[in-house]
Length: 254
Image (cartoon, rainbow, N blue to C red; front, top):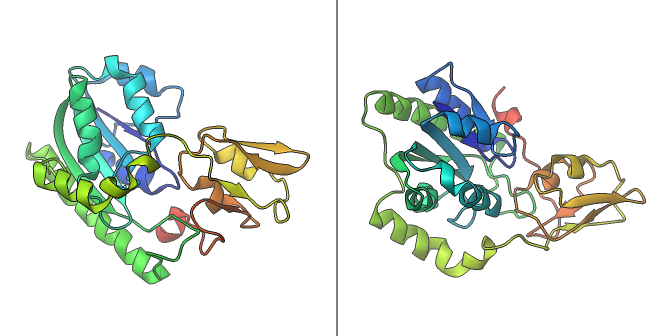
């Protein structure tokens, strides 16, 4: 057994590792960005796969990873974990259906609410205490789901037709194009930018260059919000016009 995940700001990494440790403490979770991920995937038949949900859909980087390694999923048993700030409908189902197309068996699915990481809009912003409570509730849900998994009765959130309709009507119908391709909407304020390079260092797509001591975005943003949340000058935005709050999962775990 191994874990595979994509995590923008740490939410999904934490949830995938927490679930995996609850099921098999000796198993290791790998980011899909890790150079070892493909090799480890080929060695294991039981996989816990986690990702954040964007607009009730897969982040582009995640769908590309699944498709580009389509020959490796056949015969694998996958349990899918989807993290979200509120509601996704079939968050686990969007990847599950893709995996099934490539011959995988879907053991189950799990939806987990986590603190919102979209730093440049006010919606879904909560107090520190509320976010701590959300994380604690989610930890309990993970533990319960892991116990069911070990008993051979895994949770199956996001996998049936009702979930699929909820995801489609709730968001995908209106925002389908948001995740079909990478975006060029990332904005970096050159006045505020100090050229520290932190944004470029954390970007999973190498979408940011530092030129003449200024960060310059390209057109391959997968909307993970890492750069927005690490910029010391709050110079980066994507959906909104200014940074309201920066997210770091670590502050809710101590």
